[in-house]
Length: 387
Image (cartoon, rainbow, N blue to C red; front, side):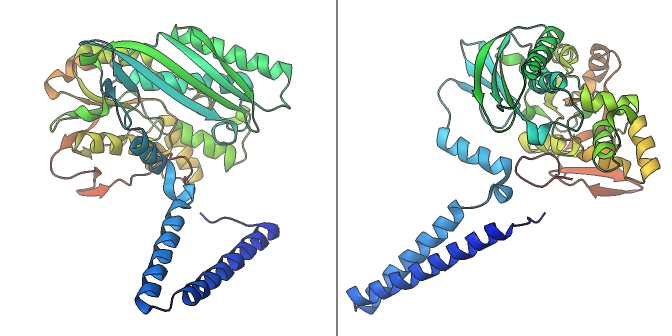
């Protein structure tokens, strides 16, 4: 996706480029004046080129680097410690407290300009911020004990806006049965709600992304596409929230984390790997594949009835809505084949098999009409363009 520059910005960049060009010429003249040795001149000029290339790499746009590139830089700089059990690369982090117990830590941030759809109230916004955090703990089979919240508030918000944010946070905390015990506030140009959750868990019971084994059944806890369809209706079809079919409205404005379901599935002992699907089904499947060093072959794409109806009405690809939408908060899991019945009972019949883990390839493929289609690694990644 390209960017549109204002004339002022274009002029600034042209001026900056001219200054850099002039500086390069001066540097070159300076080298020749101070040192007439050809090999010395060549060495200095090569050093200057190296510095220029390094400077260019350091100035890589975040739109090119992407969220994963940012995380990689942080991971390289911060490293791990002797007490780290789960670091970067999973839905949560965990540090060792004892031989068996770990402290589970989770944080997630909501930013107004990227995370709030048209017509979402402040109360719904605050609730959504907490739901996103809880969903990641649900995928690990861990119940939150407590949380804290940091608010970046634009100065033009009203007292009622703040009351609504507080009400939304309180509603979500009651819904998932844990307290928010403190936090911080600051002034910000964009509304920012950052939640951090704390939990305790048995190290052996944590369900990470990395445990999928060849032959495991790949399953999900619901159908997909409602959120993508709802957002397309709002953003591309200019629908008002009140005009959305109920399933699409609920998916966009009142998402739900499947905490109790995640706890029951983890307790069943049948789950080998799990991830929350907030970044999209396709993205989540690729993350499982990458972390577990196994391919995933899909037999079906679980598209919701409402998403199918929306796709038929407006001529969208229903599979694209299901695979690449995001913010659905269903769980995506790998299940031991001989324990699938037990897992299904634990999920009260809500577990849907969609494929299996394989050693034949890496990545994700879909069986369709006698052939296999490669599923693109697309989904929500901050700083980059999205579908």
